Image (cartoon, rainbow over all chains, first blue to last red; front, side, top):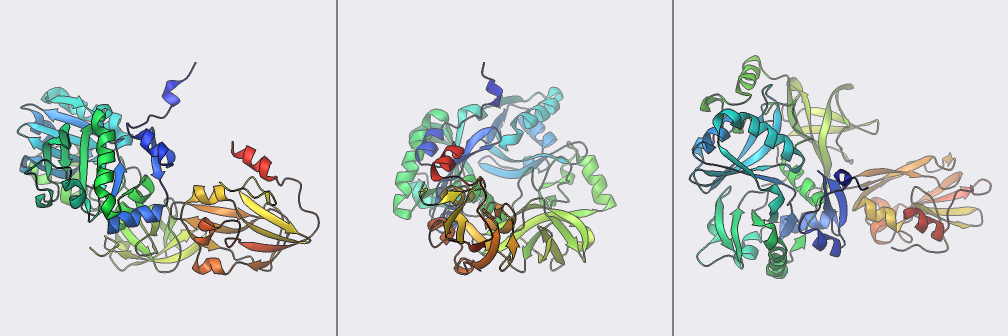
Amino acid sequence: MFNFSLMAKQTTLYPIHAQLGAKLIPFAGYDMPVRYQSDKQEHLAVRERVGVFDVSHMGEFIIRGPKALDLIQQVTSNDASKLPAGKAQYSCLPNHEGGIVDDVIVYHIRDDQYMIVANAANIQKDWDWISASNQRIGAEMIDISEKTSLIAVSGPKADATLQKLAPEGLDLAAFGTYQCWKGTFNGAEKSLIATTGYTGERTFEVFVWNEYAEQMWHDIMAAGEEFGIEPCGLGARDTLRLEMGYMLYGNDINDTTSPLEAGLGWITKLKKGPFNGSEAIAKLKTEGLQRKLVAFKLKTRGIPRSGYEIAKDGQVIGTVTSGSLSPVLNEGVGMGYVPVEHSAVGTELEIRIRNKPVPAEVVRPPFIPR
Amino acid sequence: MKLPEDLLYTKDHEWVRIEGDMATVGITDFAQGELGDIVYVEIETLDETLEANEVFGSVEAVKTVSDLYMPVSGTIVEINGALEEAPETVNSDPYGEGWMIKIKLNGEPAGDLMTADEYAKSLG
C-alpha cells in the first residue's frame, strides 16, 4: 500500500504551477515552485515591477475570544497589547530557554480576533507549543492552514495591480505597512488583505479560502499584465529576503538562537510582563551576548552559502547561516553568527568558500539601498 | 530539452564532443535548467593534465554550486574566456557558445560515456 505520509502535499494552486512549467521542489512537506523561468528575472520583477508568490504552505491560526490577547501575550515576544485592530506585528514565539520556536506575524483582525501566521515547516510545532500555554489560559484556537491559500503580490506596482480587484471605497494605496483588512475582495468572501511581506518591496498578502484561490490568482495575473507581472518562486523569495537582511527560520534562527543574538531585540518587549522565555531572555540580556548574527558582504567575487565557515585572522569563528549572490548588487552577501567582539560594522572577516578564504566585511542590513 | 545526437554525455551532466584527439566539454541543457541562473564559471586548470572524473572547475548559480568533472582524461588546452564576462551563455546556449574547455586527449576516451539516448534514459 501507499505510505501517504511520504507523499508531498500540494497547495490549491499546484495545477497552475505545473501548467506554467515551474520547477517544483519539496519544501516543508509541500511541492513548491522554486522558479518558473529564472531566479534573477523573478527577483528583478519584484524589485522593479510586480511579482506574485503562492505561499499557501504557510500556517494560519485563528486565536479568538476574551482570552485571545492573554494567550498571544503569553506566547509571543512582541507587545500585542499595543496592536490596534487592523494592524499586524512581527513577533517571535520564544521557548523557555530563550530560543526561538518560530518567527511569526500576529494580525489583529478585529476586537478579540487575532491570527498568527507561522512558517510552513513549523505549523505542528507551533500549534503544540501555543496549545500547551493555552491549557491554563483558555482562548479559542482554530488551525485554518489547510483551508487557506495565501497569495503574495509584491513590488512597486502591487497597489496598482490589486486596486483593480478591490471593492469600491477600499483605497489600497492608503494602507500603511503592517495593516490588514478583512472583507469580500474580488468576490472572495472573508478574505484578509495585509501589507505584510518578506521582500522589502510594497507587498499585499491576500489570504483567501481555498475555493477562491485559483480565480484570485488568474485575476491578479490579468490585472498585473500591463505592469509586466510575473509568477515568482521560492528561489527569488529567498534572495529578496536576504537582500533585506530578513531572517529565515531554520537557517538564521532556530530553537537554540536567542532573539537578542539575532538582532530581534526590537520585537522582544521584556517590559510588557512575563511571557514564555522572558526570564531566560532577560538573563541573557543581563549577562551579555556571546555571539551575534551579522550581515556581511564579500569584497571579491564569490558566493557565500549556508554552512561555509566564517574566519577571522585564519581562525574559524562562525558559520554562514544564509548566503547568496545579490541579484541587485551582483555581489556575494550573507549572514552568520560570530562572537560579539567581531560583530561591529566594518569588521573584516573571511568566508571559506570551498577551502579558499574570501575577504568579507560586516555591514548593516539591508544590503541594498532603501 | 535539447540533446544533440553527435555528443556523448556523462552521469554528471557534462557533454563532450570528440574530434580526433581533441574534445570540447560543457554542461547539458538539463544541467543548466536544474542549476538556474549561472553567475560564475570558475576554471583554474588550464594546462593541467587530469584523469576522467577529476574536478576541472565549478559552476555557480544563484541557488547552488556544482563541481565540473572531466568526461575524458587529457590536458586542458583552452578554456572559454567569454564565460568570465557572460556566464549566462551557459544557460542560453549550453552546447554552443556555452562550451567550457577543450581537452587534448591522452589515449582512448573512457568507456562510461553515454549516447544521447542513454543519457535521456538515465534522466528518467
